Image 1 (cartoon, helix red, strand yellow):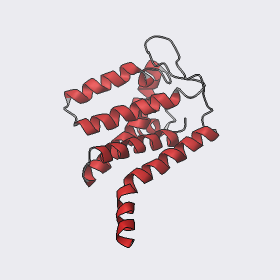
Image 2 (tube, helix red, strand yellow; image 1 turned 90 degrees about the horizontal axis):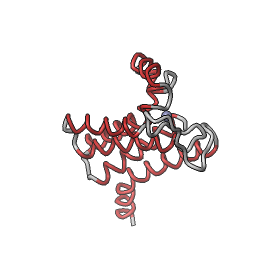
Image 3 (cartoon, protein in one colour; image 1 turned 180 degrees about the horizontal axis):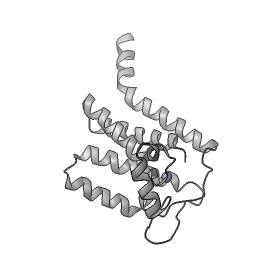
Image 4 (tube, protein in one colour; image 1 turned 60 degrees about the vertical axis):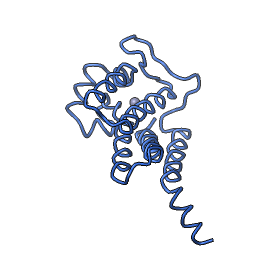
Length: 167
Ligand SMILES: [Zn+2]
């Protein structure tokens, strides 16, 4: 999937977390931003990805150590991240934003023909029975759907309030 699809899924997760936990403005923005970053972070293994271009040295190291869509797209990576976040006592709502952001990335990549090495270090590529081309119509439609849902979730209450005062 494209970086746009991944990041729009992350923003949607952040918006859902913010609404569910009734976070204040600062926490909501933080949750949305970190979920967005977490949703593109696994592509650190790809030097030309959005995140890879920002963190060139780290990306170069990860790419040469593990290869594309391996360690950073695995359950092991997500579990290790969870432990690391627990260690630094990350609040639950940020924890969910990050872990779900990363999970959304892996799930979306499992919808592409190449799949991911979900069970790394086992050399098995995992993908869903149905898969779609990166940059294809389904990819773009997913990005638009996620974006629309994010806008809806974030503005649902203010819109309703405005409507109530007008009617
Ligand atoms: Zn990926």
